[in-house]
Image (cartoon, rainbow, N blue to C red; front, side, top):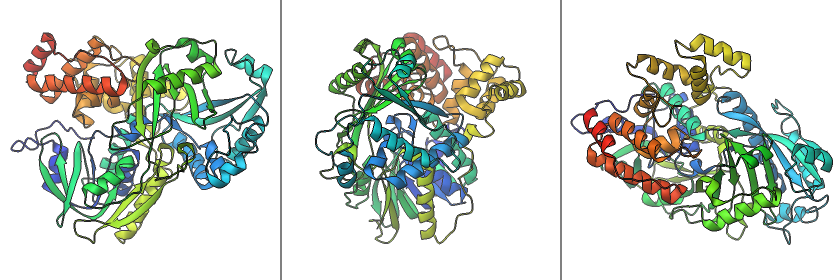
Length: 591
């Protein structure tokens, strides 16, 4: 990754990433949208030697991709919708990501509590045929779940990396999960995967694309597509306000639920999308954490919505909703949704008390689903397709719009989208991503003995504990952090957040496209997600980011205000935006 704080454009004041695009405002491919599918496509095109530009109107993975359930899963319930191709691809990609990104993607034991034997068996065929609820929705019974998991296992026969499912009766289920509702008749246990830090995995993908591109792959966050002309796509750098035009042979729209809005801004009317809102809450509840026994509780509620409760990063993630949503409006987790989540937890763990004081973080996003008319949200296809039109600016440049897509299948989807783009360019694939390890997953040790050997070989003077911490946080890209820490003359633990150090934060800010304070607290670290963003942490991080990026006192005040408003509105966190005198003095001195 490159240092985006360097003075590469002293006369314009633009960020170096933006300046690199402005210096050569043409490309074979322009990718609009830096969610997981956009960055995956950017990486794949760069690997093929394509001159590609990626832009994202916000920060990378700050839209729909930031609102996931942190799961890499096959989608067992999609079998009931008849989406066998999607399930097969999803299971294969789950297994592949466990191998290619083992630093962030981990096996996730998943338990389905079952409260009946035959429930749902009559309505399931109707759901399969119509993609609508078959009469009154009910919890799935043991027979239906057994059939589904047997079929699910069959997709892992060629190279599966996780154990097959197993059933337990009431007695053994209660022994494993004593806090479960005691009317449980059976439990089914199978494996999917969790992505512990999806934002950092996506940053690895962007970095891989830049390295593979060897100067031909360029990218910039906080750049939006605002119009079109015969000369190309009109872009605006939201930081400086600078507008410029990029000419491309192919335009690829991967802006997720905002695909139609992006096309409209480019002068092309489409109606491909029909997204739904999904919300989650993160709880600090040790009793609930322990009750999950190290794995996810996963089931379908009576209303057809998927419910998940699982321990993640020391907290408990609870989700999700599935509500029709307007992508032109911000998605927030409402109090009604919180009540719904509490009801779900009580349904499964009736003796565990939860309340709003235990919520450390909440978030919501819009799924990039296809337009679905009267189909119930829970039954809308999670598969994807690619729509080809022509760019409105010159009426001849091909434009590909991605409709759908999810975290699990991003690599396969990017491969598909790249292949279609290559065909338009009359080129062929030269590099496969099927077995290409990702970022810090390259040579990542997956055994305790392997970790110890890696730490011994790469510590370079750091303590084993600190080296292990960096390995867990960044995978084998921890070597870059270790080098930065060793090169620092004044590295020290943060006062408010001692698990991070000053040189570590300097590296993240300088090398990972940080523009705003929210980029650090929400995506370069998981501080906010786990409830660690106290007022002292907020103050110290704003001081460090401001000093590194050379903010003025006014910029610092604006950034703190922007961050506080964002964190309050979208995530339920309350922080004082006023700049403490000590922070203002440090930032001013740094300039």
